[in-house]
Length: 349
Ligand code: F0G
Image (cartoon, rainbow, N blue to C red; front, side, top):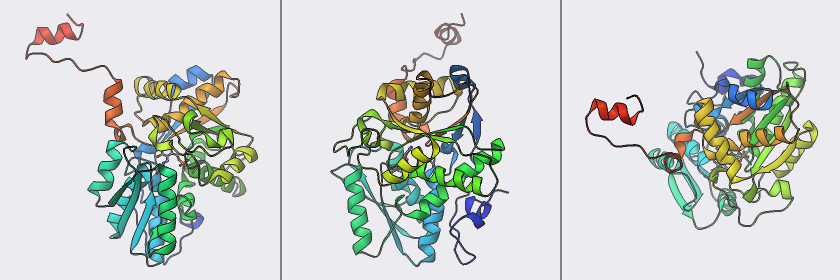
């Protein structure tokens, strides 16, 4: 039986027998072949479906470790800044551990499902009239001056938890892929995967490391432009970040792996979101679709050799943002209780 990633990878994580394990049995997510993407690219493309985690995003991997360590060190409260998923995950793990949880989110800029999650799990939610970067500054200062543990990805325990996704991929494929594509926001996850792949190589579990391909939204692409973006803007609110905390680590992942970090337009993100839902059968949130938009863009630019094994992480579940899904799909038809009317509407008669 799967008992969560701390039990699965205990000896490769910063935990000891004394660490109380706070888990919702996160991890062990599916690696799903994506034939429609393989056909488009001439590669063998897989999706690491992180929406299958307990709160619907990859954040649970980091949160199980960060919250377990916080409890071990005697913390009674945790705090985070978030574009939505971190707050949902922190709220759930805090509830599980019996901790108080405070979350700071940019007002009006987080998806409805994520807001619902933070609230239902009982977090103290502060909507800040600023962007994510402002929220992270505030949260960091509060954690410095008050007795509350910061569980953003600047907390190294988070990255250790998140690196386990790379372990799972290597186990599933028998080796590392040639290329790994990820959306990039605060740049913690790309850094965590790179750590995981390097550790697998060092441990002899893999014979190589993949090229790390990271993708930012073009209105929020500080790593691509090399400049802080004061007012980041994109429909992909999860990655609407102008000054990533793990910027240097992401540059190292890019450069040491021979990879790239590029920008994808909102239009391309939306096209990938639709393609994933309609042709692959996987419903992800907009931010997650940036990895796939990036893969298609890189393939068109000749940066993805045909025949490569490629993994795209799709980081969060589509249900996080029901408003967006409904507003971009055709409206449903209303009919009377009438078989013929139903058949005609469905083009069956
Ligand atoms: N995809 C989703 C769905 C996310 O929620 C995030 C980050 C990312 C990708 C980017 O990952 O920051 O490690 O580069 N969400 C954070 C949050 C910022 O607050 O939930 P990253």
